[in-house]
Image 1 (cartoon, rainbow, N blue to C red):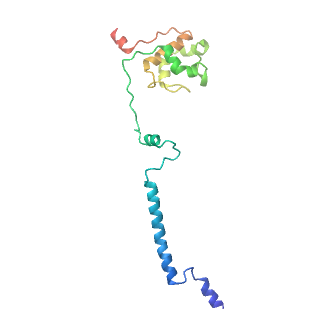
Image 2: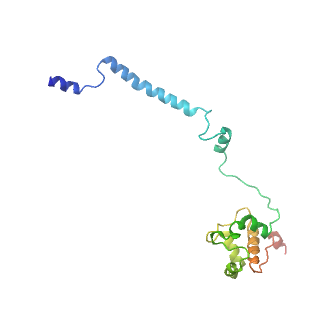
Image 3: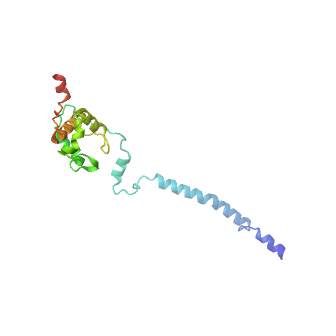
Length: 171
């Protein structure tokens, strides 16, 4: 009895040649059909992008160009310092956010004004402290300089608002 019991312990689930053929056939056929099904699913073109309620928009976003070129009118009139201040600088300088000196706060602006107009403009263009660089944004460097002059003058400075570069060359 122990010999017979020992022999059964080492046998597998396949006991007959017919079971071996069925197991061998299924072990090759089932994975092939599973692979074919996955390939058909992945290559189907009518499924929407995950989370997209508008498939056309999702497709357009996926195939859009990486970079974009924005053409601006180089001859447009330059904006005044107050307009640039309202469009770019007021977000922080009107409230004093992140330590920015408030508009017309003479005490906060006095040490900055002492450094001179060019130093203030360079700080605005390159960034300083929590202020990000302003150069290359919606406004050109001359417009940023005009905004610096506007803010400093509101705090008691006597800086002249810069003229347009073409007008400066004509003089």
